[in-house]
Image (cartoon, rainbow, N blue to C red):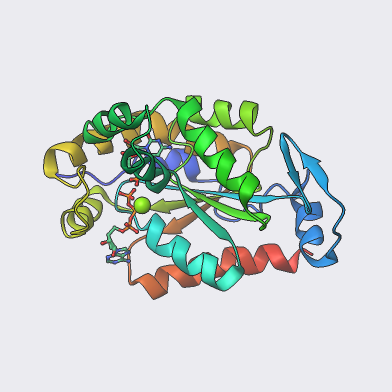
Length: 238
Ligand SMILES: Nc1ncnc2c1ncn2[C@@H]1O[C@H](COP(=O)(O)OP(=O)(O)OP(=O)(O)O)[C@@H](O)[C@H]1O
Ligand SMILES: Nc1ccn([C@@H]2O[C@H](COP(=O)(O)O)[C@@H](O)[C@H]2O)c(=O)n1
Ligand SMILES: [Mg+2]
């Protein structure tokens, strides 16, 4: 009944052995991780003490993005920003966008990009860290373009957790965290949105040599070993 996202393969086939954009700024950024220079730098529209290192974390609903981000943050010192969590926090804060966000999440649709990017920007600006994992973003080309416009930056590397639909559905239905979108009707909608809006973004980063595809089937620790290899490989470029 549930198909594997087999259509991903043509989009991501060239990504496996591609290092994150070493041809442009990837290498310099990894160098900056070790130099400890503390002169404030303007990076796009952010003013930080070090050049930010931005990782986008993509994958379908329940593919394990959040689970792996927690481990990456602990192991490699990243600040984890989950776009979904920021939106859920906005609902709870009774902001003027709260009702719109709640209704959008219930429908499994994408919240207007300006709203999400502003929440991400606020977190990035107030963080003292310069290494960011942005989980569940960009979900659409509109998200991607809004980030580039509002933040003025591109990701250094994009992780993609590739998981069969059947496994994603099983995980989401077992998640048990009281999320309004963890029900079979909304999951079906989220999977459709993932295929139609998020896969093109994944294809975009694959073509730009920034995508690192992770096989998201296996134990949490097995999957993390693949993730560790990506970051270790990047650090070795310093
Ligand atoms: N490798 C794994 N094997 C089995 N279960 C897993 C694995 N990784 C994560 N899970 C579980 O699957 C559920 C979904 O994981 P997680 O919340 O990390 O996914 P996600 O990609 O962040 O999903 P969403 O996009 O819906 O936020 C959680 O209950 C988590 O504990
Ligand atoms: N860039 C994003 C991210 C999320 N949303 C909305 O939140 C829902 C839950 O997101 P998770 O990453 O926690 O699964 C998602 O289904 C969207 O409705 C968004 O609009 N834009
Ligand atoms: Mg998540």
